[in-house]
Image 1 (cartoon, rainbow, N blue to C red):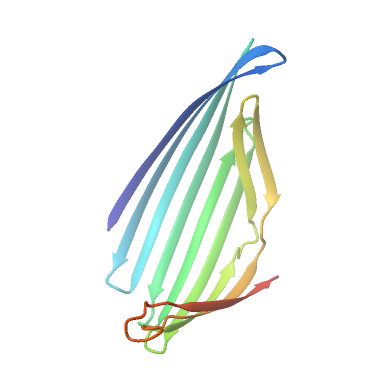
Image 2 (cartoon, rainbow, N blue to C red):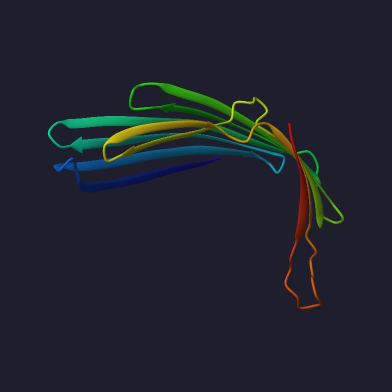
Amino acid sequence: MSFSYRLSLSSNVRPGFINYISSTSKNNTVSNNLSITYNLLDKFNITLGETIANNRSEQKSRNTITSLIRNYATNANANYFLTKSLTLNTSLNYQDNIAANGNSVKASIWNANAVYRFMQQKAEVKLSAFDLLRQNKNITNFVRENSATTTISNGLQQYFMITFSYYPRKFGGNNGPSRGASGGIMIVK
């Protein structure tokens, strides 16, 4: 079992003028990422993670305006190695974005794939399914000098993809570098 924690901090100050009045914008962002991975021999692994990010903006001119945007993301990823050649993978990502006005936008994204390797592990076929719950949204929260904005737009909806990849051990002679080739077909529903 392994644990991982990552902390990210950023801060900036932007002086400016709005209608000839001095206006200073101060932005602070804190992001905490925690993940736990569990491995069971060489057959199964699962990773669970949580990200909490806060963006605080303070706008000073005649009045002081403060806004806070919070983003929460919970994700899980599991791999099951059925045989040396066949692997199943699934991932789930749940997001909750709370804008400065208190409105919350939530989305769950579930993806899955199966990978089969053959020809002495030199080639693979991968079948992938994306956005199985049909909830994909592009959510962007940002704070600037005099505004806090949340943008929600439709992203690429549910689709399926078949990919073939080939990884030859030697390419172009005995001393040539190892290179691979791949191609895929995407089916959008």
